[in-house]
Length: 122
Image (cartoon, rainbow, N blue to C red):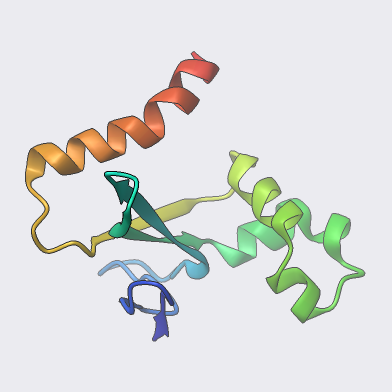
């Protein structure tokens, strides 16, 4: 288990779905923070992105082959390439970290965060 540092929420190192032999591995963690009244930050939800490492190596291996493991683990360029590559299967695990969050607030927070990017790509 790995822990998202701001929320303390645990994430498994891989995400296995029953009946499949391929288990995507955790590639990154993040948290959605909302500032309330300009005073207090509230952690709304945490995200973990899981990636098919075999597909990622196949699609991007030659481009990042010369980098050591630590450099790869901290490479924003690699993560950006993985996210943009359509041939790499990705799974997103979202865990709500703010217990008093109502469904409508959650939908609003998602919409606020995702809508600009979705409008940009059409």
